Image (cartoon, rainbow over all chains, first blue to last red; front, top):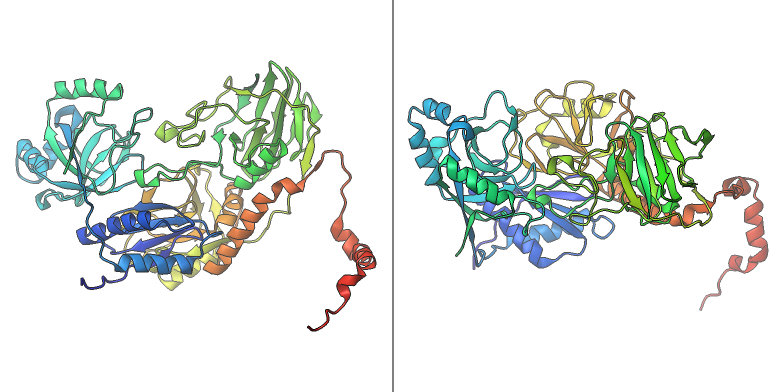
Length: 243
Length: 345
């Protein structure tokens, strides 16, 4: 039998949610445990639990205090978290096209300069990565990916940009990610993808799930423009590989 | 079908309902009314479901005109002057606008948000079960953005039923109650005490995403960066400049600043209705008390239909009758049996 796992911390997030924290840091093992608890909780179907939100190192569990008290829920969550969870039977992998550099990746050259190498080398290091969706958050579809090569770890920009384009593929700290909607960002922008991880009036509205695998491949800017038009019409563009 | 035309409206006004929880794991914030009790009261007055979509009206004025028939509406929330063609309208009372008549609302006198409920609700296409506007995500129906003059809603013709008023309990006063955490251990005792014992004011730059607080600078123990984790309505995060922000209905679903405390759900609407510049304090309560309050608040919402009265009914003051010991004697007189001591079996 596998040993019992170390218990997470239960942190109150008001009267209707609890944060189940596995680590204070970005930590792959912690993220695996977050996703495992998320799956276990979905399977357990606890009356009163309304929604669970996985992030890098914790699972935020929303619940109705009219049906479930903090202590009772806490006990159940600790029991679920102490049991090693079987890995998912199926892993979904998305292959995502990216137009790197130029107007779509305005920081690529600066990143290369900072790391004393060429833009092509940065792209090579980025497309070789095998990433996992550690969490989706902040704005709809913004997929935070773990698994960025150590040589690409960089602190965020001193001055975050107030507006960065939809579909931006960037790096910040130890993370890379797909930013679906235009918005503010302090990350370094390497490229853009036509893939919409969130798109209304498309089935499914959300493409990526926490736990999905992601790899990138480079496309030229002309291909991006074509894919962008197709995506606007509701095409999914990203290739899905189930394994 | 009748129509309600927005004749004029200020900023920070949009269609809101109970929101769309359930997709926060995809980064989609639930949105919904800033003051749930006020929206529910307005809906109750016109016979709608408590969290049907209504118009959330910001601190400035607004006016609405009925077209193609009569419509029945009600206003609740922040106090403000209201009239139809110069004739004053009592708040928290349903009223029927005849075809062509205009309901005019003044600026909020204290508070921030009022709710216009329309009998039969607003017609639109729900996404994830909600018409609530979330402009950043392009969501909301019939308009996925704040309202503008000239916008209109397709609505039911007025039923012609009797007008009603609603007797709401006196809004609680006193500090806004919080539960400490989830990251209160990122602050030392001095800074936690500073947070709990200082006067705060809501900055004029606040919006549906967050209420920025003005007051003393709260210092972190280990710097202001934490690994992003999930947020809730009422999370109080402290960014690098030490000025707390209470996250509201259009918040980001995750955030990377330490959260010192969380406003209890029963007090969130009250905080939302605190006008910019008014001093207030926070008070820490236990989880048990916060959850008791949440259950009491849920009960208040469920019980709203029982608080409806005919609009012209005379107010019967039960408390005054009790004080005079009239009601008590009357009950004892007709039901003397309740005072008998049951026999031991």
